[in-house]
Amino acid sequence: MYSVRGRTTSTGAGGLVDDGVWALWNPHPTARVRLLSVLCVAQVAVGAVTGRASLARLSSRGTPAATVTAGISSHSRRRLAPPSGALLDLGDYTSQPVIDGLCLGPAFNNLAEIGAFLSHSYRGSGLCVPPGTGLGLVQVTGGNIPAMEVSLTWMED
Image (cartoon, rainbow, N blue to C red; front, side, top):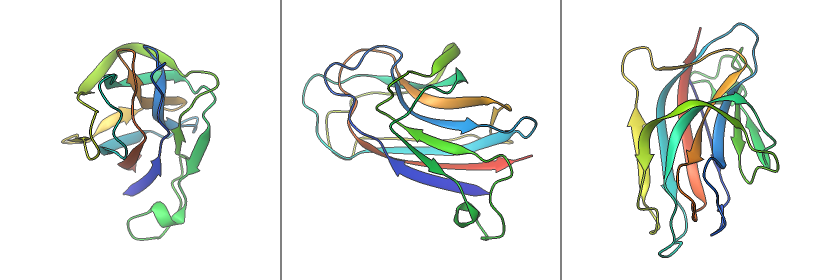
């Protein structure tokens, strides 16, 4: 099992529908990543103009402001780096990721206060991120998505 975390930046009041906030990207040509859990915690208060965000599948990575590369320290037993080369991309994106289909949910609402959070676990074998694709949090309404701490846990096959 692997986990990675990072901190996003605020999208600002000018955040648009379909803007990426963060993404788990699977660059491997054959390995599948199975997302087991997501935790996002708002780090700042953003006031009344808050956006709404949801998980979505991504077919193109986009150009994130920062990337966290999972390594051996991401492994639950510190044995090996993830074979997939999984990446956690963190906004502000200069080129947005491409959404592949409808948003998956759960929606992340009421982001106005410090400590507002989204926590979700996927039962069974997890939510599959096929080779060469991603899964990320994207805005479904305009407005400000606050800077947040993101923590993801996954397995690979």
